[in-house]
Length: 232
Length: 264
Image (tube, rainbow over all chains, first blue to last red):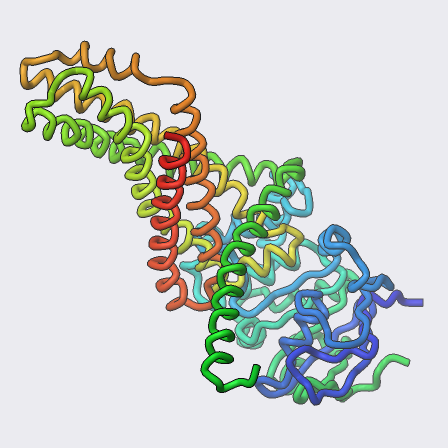
């Protein structure tokens, strides 16, 4: 039986007083699109699932453990299993892109040599231009910054990756680099994906190979509506 | 108390002010406690990043400002003895006393604080503000690195170390300035004034001044990091730069007053 990695039970989002509570769960190697108009609660949902914003009601479980009953240390120690790419990229602006990628790996206690090797191998596999690495993150374009943020998150090999960056989704759909292969690569390695975007699910299907079936949900004023069948 | 009445509105305004003041004290203390808790987690990669950031900040705040502090200290030394000469009070004892009380324990530390606030404090506010706006702080937390421990702690300690170093250097330069002016006037001579100033330094007042400078460093670090971390947008970062400058300058003046009144 596949392990449930992330689960929400009777969750109600903060800031949406009239929203219904909802249940949701995500398992290994699954991909979910979260769609909805601007202000519909997509980002609030992602922030809540990441444990950054507490829910008004309900329970959030990471690998079966209630997040709201964890100590701050337990939450911090559980972080490596969750990856996130947020709006703005989240790279340290004054550091080079390479230093930002190194930081992600070093915080997982990889040595300097191991981290550098992992970055080189990743860059070669997905065709990341070498000149991006030497630039300060602030000097990268929005697309490049978002793609480097995805690289940092993917290199940490999370078990669940939550993406809440319209710029990243647009950059991946635009193509032009080998980075489009990162999402299928992560799914192949058992990582679960939750991608929030105002784009329609049909358009998002281009991001995955034909054989992978993504499921989708639609957010509306803080309430969740399943477009695909929910887990039983 | 009915809302809308004069007394009710007045009480509400006082309550709001009191709450804001309490928050103004509680927030830096929370930041300090959270940052200092990071001292227990300096192993592995976090320790390596801590050491690198600490040295980088000490270099930027302390070493790179040495020339500036030396010039200011030297000028202050001359400016302190010049009026004494004009007033015909230029005896060695008077000069040493004025330098000791006014310069070493008050003016030099305060002017060093102004240099540190202007050069490094604002740079830290801008840096952390940029990181907040770009989502880097949020990302650090999501990667399991507590931002107060990862970013604030090394900067806080660097401010304290740099302030101590620069104050020592500034005081030495002030003595040199005063001695140089006496040498120029062909009166007491460089070596005599320099030796007398050094001999007049006592351990207890020096320890009190060191404590005051330590309080400066902590206050500057907490205020500038706090304003940086509370920035929400680009224009907000710009506004916070000026606000942090004024806040830390006023705090340093208040600390000087407090130490001067209670210890001397």
